[in-house]
Length: 534
Image (cartoon, rainbow, N blue to C red; front, side):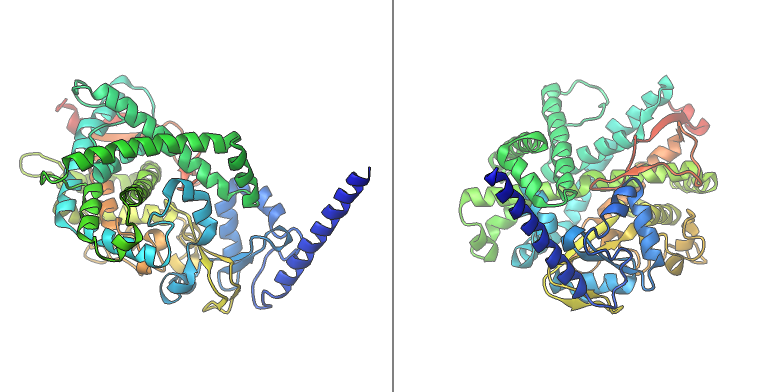
């Protein structure tokens, strides 16, 4: 009995201390901050739970109602406080002017560290800058562009298009979201590791032992998926204590995560061993070989000093390449999934995309739209993809952590340790940024009088981020998306099983990227102009 009373007293004292700290944090936050839910005890927990199924639209409503499109967010008992914004001036401050003060921090790095290690997307400071320099050099290489174009063409013409043709002939519905997700994963693995395996149907299945390779690649795909999903779920826990305790005990989702990462590590290690054996033959063009070669050349530099032992170097290579697989795995497939739905909901736009794709055929009727030069002139398609990502950005919210206290350009006070989020999803729905038709899919908003694409400042359209951490793969992503759309739309019409309407968009679910809840079941129809070719 005495032990029970003592435990109760400790619990009451702990709650009182947390409540006191919460009240102090809230009182010191600064009276200028716009805070829709200022309750120092519950913060925004109740409305958050009530609106979780429509979280992004709820967040958009809160930001639109704020005088400066920036709000203070309060967690229960003052834990997990921060700010969220949809104001380009604040975004510019977070990503450019105030870049040194707004870091990735433990909020994102902690949940994803087991999967991504010291990779570029978790790193800060010098560790980030040396990786950024290395990656920037690789991504600016013309030979990498040519190599990635060949990989894309092979996956497009040997896997994706035959699968869609088979679906058109059978009349069966396919989940386009899953198909695109697998296609993007196969493509980025080809660029990252130089592997030939695929999770999709291949043309001419005989592949010289390919079935075993496919099983291993498919296991890698599933394990990577599980690892990403569980790592993201860690971020949704009210406190890291919960998932850390589960990890220590090796139970529940943490046990599954450990197994998934084991599969990922073993698969990547096998690829790295193969790459080491073949190094020096002069045909290495994928990211892993480029990063490995750069590390060897950099032996006496800062990078070499950071990772001195062979084991440390291998782990670093594993982390940076796995990070790029994550970046390319779901982002383009998310964008393309919503894009094809938007085309179905807007037949006029779909027709213009088709006409531009059909007109780009060369004189021999070839439509191998995988090269940078061939795709550059497709301005309407570029505008359509851009407007689709304005409405449905692959990463709807991005987060930073304030290393020190700060005052944002709109006067909002930020305390050290607070998260600082910017919401691209909300920004795409702000009339003050895009006009009264901001919720309409209108690619023409991106074209000038001559039909040329005109970009806007990245702080207003932060889909690919801005400043020193701006996305290195932006150009590659556009090439992949434009090549896929041009090839698919020229051959097929894509018809959602559930009729597409802008008045009733599909529900989404919270994940690392913006995902359609329940997938995108579609039926594929051959276009009459293409029917005679098969």
